[in-house]
Amino acid sequence: MTATATLDLPRTVVSPPVRRIATALGVLGALISMIGSWIPSLWGDEAASLLSAERSVPSLLRMITHVDAVHGTYYLGLHFWIKVAGTSPFAIRLPSALAIGACVAAVVILGAQLDSLTLGVIAGAVCAVLPRVTSMGQEARSYAFSAAIAAWLTVLLLGILKQRSPSRRRWIAYALLTTLAIYVFLYLALIAIAHLALILLRDDRKSLAQSWARAFGIALVLASPLIAIGVLEHGQIAYLGTRTEITFSTLVVGLWFGNNPFAIVAWALIITALVFFVVDWRSRRARLRLAPGALPSATIVAAVWLFVPSILLIGSHLLVPDFTARYLSMCAPAAAFLMAVAINKLARRRVVVIALCLLVVAGVAAPNWVQQRGPYAKNNSDWAVISSRMGTLAKPGDAVVFDESTRPSRQTRLAMNTYPTGFAGLEDVTLKTPFYDNSTWHDDAYTITEAATLGRFTGVTTVWMVEYAIGSKVDTNGISELQALGFQQGATVKDYRSAIIEFTRP
Image (cartoon, rainbow, N blue to C red; front, side, top):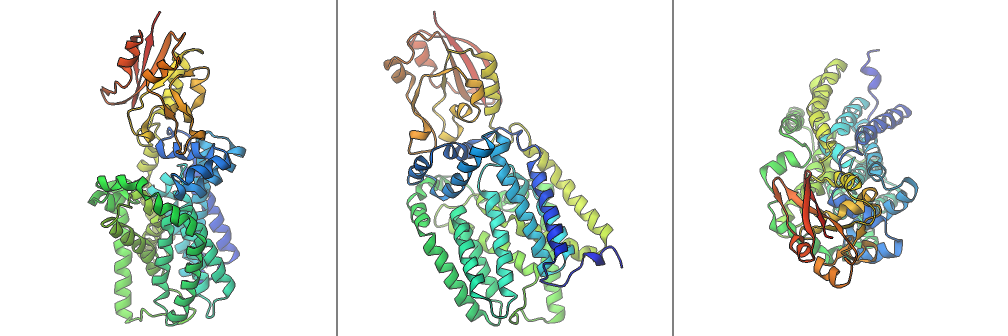
């Protein structure tokens, strides 16, 4: 028996070898995302996650009735996680890496269900190194969970489709998992829409579509509180209408592939998989309609998963601004799956060729992986460096003030919220309302003049101003107010996206 033959299993069988290999590749996928995840500084979106999770449950529930309801389930889960694991960057990013492990395992099982364990192994390996996957696997946001749930929801659907008479219990499970999906990320409802497209390929589509409609309807009813609040809070993402979110680069590279070399390889493989399917279909004059109990091909499942949610979300953006590239993270495993289909077809089950193809994919993915683990990889944030600098420069009893002129997700004040160690013993003299007492996820602050009127600067002789900076351009927010209070500007320490300025007075 050849080495490749031992990898092949009958279609739709999830055997103990499949489960073992899926688990092993899931662990590998989690490790790939986990390694070095502590290096990049936290950034604005992750600050929203951490500060929301640090609130009490009543405070969090109060906040999500004003902002971020669509992330409320993730915040609540992270709230309980940090009570056990702590709030270090590694700790709060670890759940996302574990979610990627679950996603990779589901992709392996999908490959075994639809074709063979060979395809499952290839798909799992590609998914584990896909740049969008390794990015969301080291980020304290819900996107890794959205990809994992999308994958497992598809596994569940295939389990339903391979039954000639699907049981009510499976449809109830599908309804409940779809409900959870919507609570984790509202747009995951689009995955269920993609599943309807697969159902419509069946000869027994009428009865299946009716069952799907009941399950999806139950999910929508159960998720209706979140949907209602999400609609009311839609103004939160109205800024997407003022930015150019849909560009050629975003659609071809930015959605899932990270950089141009990987995108070229990825799209070449995806197009190859689609061409193989069309050629094979035409040569066999096969029916697209499927008999009861039959499953669609791996290519159709992956293509529907990849393109249906993407087309629906991008298309809706033309009417309502509701799209940014991260929202289609749920389709990243499908991109990996289509790439794997092409590799499997090209290699014709030859282990050496498969290994070489995977090495090429990993090789073009490696620069993305390394870049994602740079100290400023997350939106150029340098909060970790700011905290370290402050721990060296300032002494207990000094005051600290922050540039409040930038948008909340970029304010230098978040360095203190996310990396508090370097600010220990310093007086936050402009703090007005801390985040945990606020209706939003961030602090509110007085101006320096307002704080001075309240006596906050009485007895203060040294103030450290942390300004936002891009290149040689350093913001000047608050400097004139400090000078009006008698403070003289001293040394400036410039960092990647910030400047720390010392002010003293007798």
